[in-house]
Length: 367
Image 1 (cartoon, helix red, strand yellow):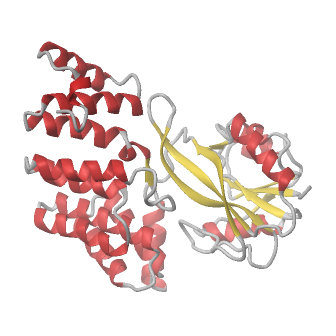
Image 2 (cartoon, helix red, strand yellow; image 1 turned 90 degrees about the vertical axis):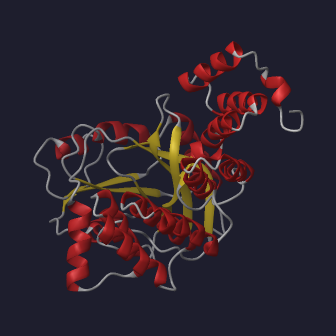
């Protein structure tokens, strides 16, 4: 069986570190914890799980800290977690099964789902794939002072295992923008950094600057297609905030240059038409989101509700506004199937019952 080294960087994580390390169980053969300047009980908690606890002077460079941790790992594979990550029990079982089955020719990079946002029931609603298990060697190197990444190399495997990210406190909200601004001033931004610089400007409500930064990213020829699609969407959000509605739509449509429309993009375009009360056009795009929900764009950022619940709910409203009450009621029931027990669907159901509409009669092709 292959050996695995868990390599972590931490700072002031006394509230979550025990939860994280406890969830790892006996999956890792060794645990390396690198502290970048804690002033709480983080180091004490780490030492309950491992004697390999090191210090690293923080210098606004996540890749440097993670590479220091990786160099301490002796396993055939290096595995990383953030302190506020959790491995659910069923996912830990999958991890152990994966570890037991790995054999030559061994994959070099194993991608796993990362769930970073959840609904009120705890269901993941925002996920994306990350490199999670990386074969130890000279190519297992992090790049990027912020939004760091290990460029894929060799044989890449994607597995249906999910690591969950559960924050208990808010980090320094200005940190990422501060680092990226410093990089821009001192050395210029690489293409991937330019993308994240634009998004950080958006998060800080600097909409004009964000729009320009994302436009500059989109002009570069070497961007990842999923980032390009996402940049078109975020630029449209900036333009919306700037009340430049036609440009907002043009930014969304320009994403079609980079691939089949993702459900998230379809929902954004549908929302643009909905706000204009152009319900037929909006419904077309929401239906497209449903059609593409299981097939399009599984490598980028996935908003699960855009692949079922949201388009169904919006189709309910669109068809109601168009006077197609039966069809509206049918889509409300379909939304309920995607996300059972929501108050919105229950209110809609009562509304349709009050006006005597039967959802079964409204099924597409019937009404």
